[in-house]
Amino acid sequence: MPAPIIVFLHDARYDRVYQAVSLLATAVRMGRPAYLCLFYDALASLVAGTWDDVETLRALGDDPPWRVAIALGFARNEGPPPTEILAAARAEGCKVFACSTSVRIMDLDPVDVAPKVDAIVGMATMLEAAGEGAVALYI
Image (tube, rainbow, N blue to C red; front, side, top):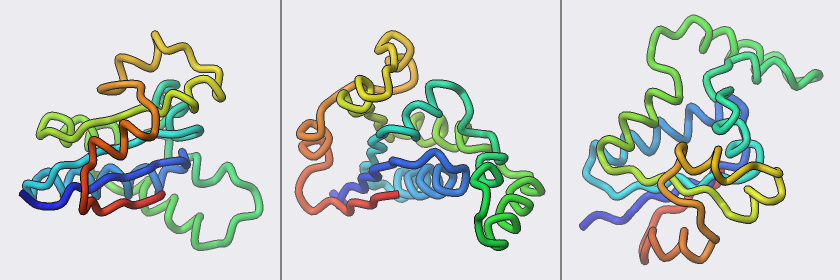
């Protein structure tokens, strides 16, 4: 069996969310086990329903000009938004975990989080699920 891919997603900025879910969707299509582990802003944004908001790229104030170019490129993009990419990846076996500590720190209601993820777990469970030899990415 190919090595699993595990993505630890901390940031809710559109380009990072898009990158994370695109990597995972590609991994499951290639037959690799894939796991998305959500923390802090990434988790809160998914629960709030703002993952598909490309404006998160422009909301950072004094960002470099290239970030504006990326935002404009995504705005022109006719491809699926991150939530649709993630839904397709999940349909092919990608698992989504919410960090239990992040749920508490971000003052999220577990009842609101649960429908968006496969499980609310601690980091040890995330690492055990990925298994040995996993490719781990922090975004």
